[in-house]
Length: 145
Image 1 (cartoon, one colour):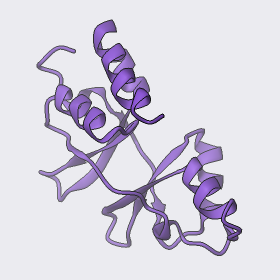
Image 2: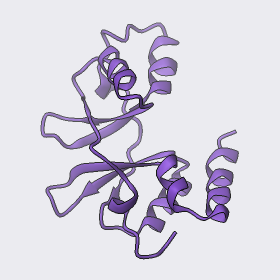
Image 3: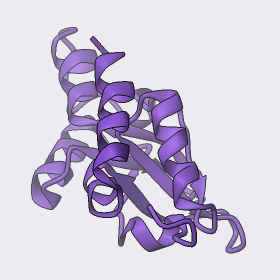
Image 4: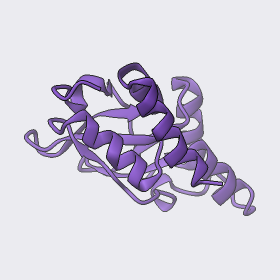
């Protein structure tokens, strides 16, 4: 990855949030319609509150016998890690490796801390060297098993 790249230059923009008061059924429908496996959770103040994955819905709701239509997205938000849009892209990679995460919200701290995008594995793959991709995979996937 070239040093001059910023997080905002490698992220996917136009990320849609699920409101923390919306149901997990709503979140699942949004994921289907957007063809994504993860959604940011935003509050009524339009600020990032967490992330929810399709796996969260299956494991923490459905498999536990809960009704996705009756459970709110805000109840399942996982631990939140994010990066400033102006941060170096290598910092995004390091953050994802350190926390063993595959998606990283990008926040514009100069614009009222608004969510402006998401960095995913696909974004990294387009901007990393083969060596960096191998190191990322080893750190994020090998440690998960």
